[in-house]
Length: 110
Image 1 (cartoon, rainbow, N blue to C red):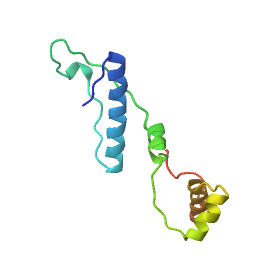
Image 2 (cartoon, rainbow, N blue to C red; image 1 turned 180 degrees about the horizontal axis):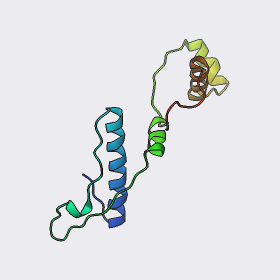
Image 3 (cartoon, rainbow, N blue to C red; image 1 turned 30 degrees about the vertical axis):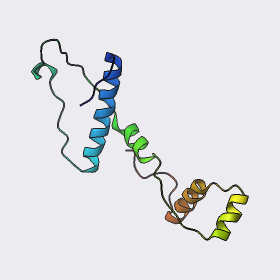
């Protein structure tokens, strides 16, 4: 369920809600039903039906590339040197993990 202060905002929020829900269903390997026929959907007086369209490959890519915070522990002496050199821990860790795992790009986004 979603809403907005304007029709445009409500439609944008509905698209976001649909994408997030479908993404969760995909992860859970839930059955995703076919689309509804707008002519068969009952609506209250003063309400209307609007079609919401989404394309999942870019949604999957965005969700899989979002940042995830991780905590790590290193010796103080190593941290001191790294801070002195202006090391970007996130960049170094990502590069090291990709090299260690033998991957360059994510194995998704069909």
